[in-house]
Amino acid sequence: MFGFSRKATVLAGAMVLGLAAPVSAQDKGQVNVVCVLAEWCDAMRAPFEAATGYRMEFLNLRSNEALVRIRAESSNPTFDAYFAGTGDPHFVAAREGLTEYHDSPLKSELLPDLVSAVDGAYLPIYANPIAFAVNPQVLEQAGAPMPASWRDLANPAYKGLMGMADPNSSGTAYVVIATLVQLFGEEEAFDLLAAMHQNMASYTRSGSGALGPVGQGELGIGVIFMSSIVREIQNGFPIEIVLPEEGTGYEISGVSLVKNGPNPEGGRAFIDYVLSKEAQDLGEPTGNPQPKANMNATLPEGAPEMSKVNIIDYDFVTYGDPDLQSRLIGRWTSEIFPVPR
Image (cartoon, rainbow, N blue to C red):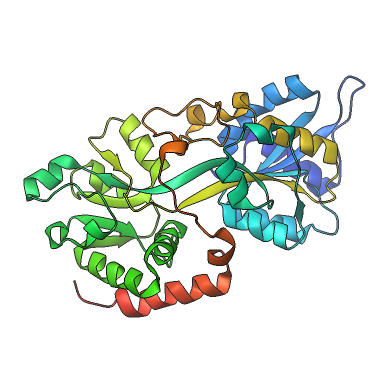
């Protein structure tokens, strides 16, 4: 996913040489996008060009790499828009003045809760809640009940049956910690994390690392972003999605307008297209089955409607603060992880 596409390679070469592709009399010029989800960008390119008259080129980078690139080019930006990836880098880019808000006419089609949650830092394209991936057969064989809540995960019946990522290497696991702190307060959250620790078979490096063992019947419960569970269900694995009854945290991916980019009108046109039902419906076929921000977008197979998910009032600004993040992860690492299981 994270290699350069053909179009991304062309764009990178042109930028190194300081050249721009020739503009024909029939088009409106070129829009340069830094894109975290290459397959989705590649699928959007032709219909975007046909709909708007702009040509689109993109460079595929990981979320934090995209932020570093935009920051490094702030005095002379080469990109017009920044698409997808986790929400934190979009917040940081807005806070540092690297991006600016585009008040898109498509905003009225977006889920209001997602728009308000990002508070004018960027525009949302999808939400991805934390959920439990559950293998009912494994739990039945172990005589363990189906979980319904975060507090249920403290049940000793799940000992050795649970998996989650390590927050030192995974943003997914940090969202879990931040969610519990916001739901229960820090002390009760860490008591719950300590009880969950006793049930963990292992901690994985990646956020979705526990999903394979759950699908293969090695674990009964994985705490993971919902989109990964949806993909596993679509691939035929015998697992179910459980959304905790107290509510759950989530990430909001988005799209941002790069400040002082070479083609700001083209960047705005790209953002407007990205927010459309047509563009959002290209997400699932390219491996992105998250519930989309556009209320008219087709719901991915196996995913619950986002409006029916009990999401908490997640404080993205506070819990995206690097100092708080470092402190909470440090506390987990010193107080929870070393305790024998």
